[in-house]
Image (cartoon, rainbow, N blue to C red; front, top):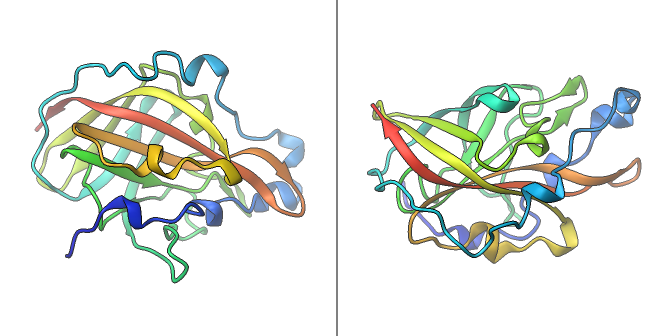
Length: 207
């Protein structure tokens, strides 16, 4: 597979994740997905914590985020004709995806995971992503038998119009991970107005 940089992803990356179909068809009464608290956002931004040594490239097969109950298989994602990141099938509420033309989780660079916040049936794989806190653990099972362990640095929510492409997808000199779903405000006409983004870095591995 030809590997390309994350910079080819357009700023509309996760909008296809964001229709809010469950809320539109009556789920709103059950409450909207949690959004990041201010304390989990930019505190400490600009000061990098030490990272574990990078791992060799290997495709990921599963992601686990114990604090929010995520344990989901991963499918490869490409780009749509408009240049945005494609999305996992909406009908599977426990499936996330990874940008397979970019960095694999654990190697040097910025790896990208994305998943739906909900579908027409109810909450989906990353419904509680906005509740994740700094210091939380994300584990990615890799095809070579290793497990890449990441620690959350911050959790942000961005309006779609202000999505910081370079900050989210830009190159990194250490192994980093971004996990993306929908968030921010919601309306019946446009769905979710933005994205929740988790920033994390590699702090260990096992295998």
